Image (cartoon, rainbow, N blue to C red; front, side):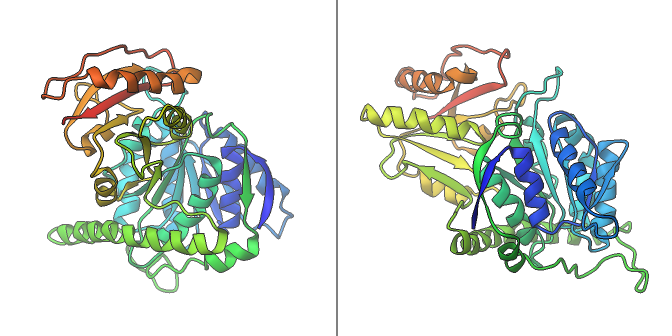
Length: 391
């Protein structure tokens, strides 16, 4: 193990792809993932002619980039691509194709807002993909990002899974912010992650037809996808255990922070969790029994882990960086019996806002009446939904 330089999320993603022995990288640049594309281009250009180990392509659209990724992966070539916000939404049809064909490619999404036009971080893009048949991880820092991308290939390529993986990082807060990252050696990763060996793929010596039209077989295909997604939970745990033994870093499906005796818990995903931990520590210093739970894996949804973690908790605050207009935050509907108030996601004031919202929870109704809306602002990166479960 060596100590790497300070790495941005973009640099960590490229390094993870390189360590994973990725061979093909079809790309379409969009802000804020364009920095990854540039760094992959630099990596490709730095290779000597005749000794290139990574192929790099820039295509005319996000759809073309994912189409090329599907074709590449179908030949048994380990493939990596990236997307963000509007690009991810335009890829949606082909995301179903990739999972339907059971192709274990990995895509990094740099989460950003959709419309009105906004390049700042929000999770609506990544969470709108929750039913596409892809495994979904939301990372909170650049060390976890690098580790998760490498783990994602080992998980996806397991014969009991064979599904594509989305690994999310937050725009700018991760993608363009440098953090200290411990980088595994190429030798250690080559032992951890063997070469890709697809059971079925495109091969001119053994012609096959992939993704053919089906009739009554359709339900069988979907049932197999469903079983594979359920299998993934155990495989994720196993891979995480192996990683921990080799590199002494463990993530799990969820992260628990000061949860041992917590009566009040903040549920938050992504880089916001790193900031929320400061709020938890400050509240702990005031003798408040507050904890934090961070869902790292969104698909498969770790409902049993979350249920176990929250079983003795009095109140839960679900901080959603997304919205289903007319309904509320997306993650809210995965947590039982919530109440809601809305609060500004206030950039550098975020920690203070969390403490202020915690102080107001005692005034929220616990008899089934919704809490009042305290404020709502779209001037900052995104909105934050504060959900309190009924007593």
